[in-house]
Image 1 (tube, one colour):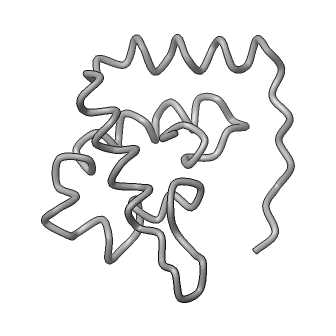
Image 2: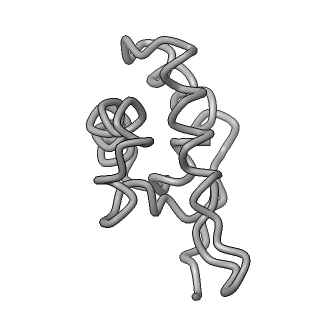
Length: 93
């Protein structure tokens, strides 16, 4: 699938890092989200994974194994929307 091109500036990256650090999410929660997202990769069609943010979509969002990670998604989705440029996958990883 074609992806929109986003070339963040150094300041964009700094701002996003600060937003994530100030989000109130623990390191454990952030790692949990990143791991859960990466584990959605499907070898058959090479979709999902850390750069797909499929964790935010059904059916992965409803899997019991992703329950802890999914609780952090609204916080990361808010940061993503406020950035206006970065994808949710960018924010997760």
